[in-house]
Length: 355
Image (cartoon, rainbow, N blue to C red):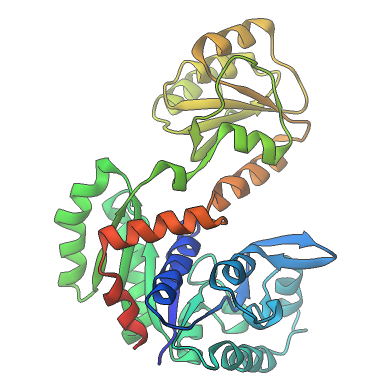
């Protein structure tokens, strides 16, 4: 048995949902399945410890008995990275910890799914990038990638070269309707002609690609200033309204499923954003309430205005973390991804990577 390492070209590819959905498919097929995420990168403080949410969800979904430190032997936190750069982490001991805990996780299992880090290059300072991890654990690799334009294939080819013969194939996730034909008719044949196997493409499903305005407000602890505007629209990305009005207008017109983050005192930016169809809400920083005219226009447009007390930089970081996590950390999302996998690709072919 070879473990299957699910890696990604960049952050926010849906890697967690794919990895757990694949493990669920294996379990539903009668296999005993193990899960491991050697480098924990999605961190939160809980009961005095730093925990990655992904192994916690895996334990729930797969009914696993392994301890958190066995499924996640390395907590890849900013403090850990700093200590490693200063030479205060024993690289050989870290590698041994990964292999020892993998042996525990894999004991008695028919299949093991290993989740990579936020992107395949993470871990280079301790010689444990995802390609290094594949070599260390003798894993086959499923690479998850996004596709927005042909230039994205540069990153796919770079990753394919880094993984070499360990790459089983590529799976494109969350492909928009606008890009689907180009991907399937041009990009995938191009990759296959270069010797890169492509398992298929999963179409974009909005509820898996972002969070609702209401969920965003809850996560940020924001006040919703518009009582009548609905908060069920989805937000997938953020634009920062720090430029002049004309430049802002140009950028906002190209936006889709976006929230605009700007200061509460920037009424000209707020007005420009409310007029752009792809802008779903305003996220105002600094605790400054907008003018009555702006609030009235937002109500007319049906676009909520959220207000936070923090500064713009901090708000951007927090908001991006919320959208980056999306809804991939609940059982319903994993179940939905499992259905999408079954519809779009040969799941048995994916699971055969670990045979």
